[in-house]
Length: 96
Image (tube, rainbow, N blue to C red):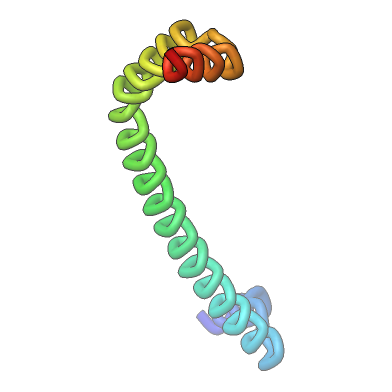
């Protein structure tokens, strides 16, 4: 049995104090990175939800927008008379 214990001691990796501190610091930094990445992911999810709701509100106004567009297009076709001509006709009516 003493041969097996000596063999185990020889094959077991020896970790120095500096290596141990490095590994601990690395693990802490990796945990911080993990927490930060989770926070970023949550923020992006919230932003995505907010953008989706904004788009939904915008789509709700599409029909109103089309109605106003039709209205203004109709006004343009009716008011194709130049402004000067309309003003002159109005002045002539007043003089009569």
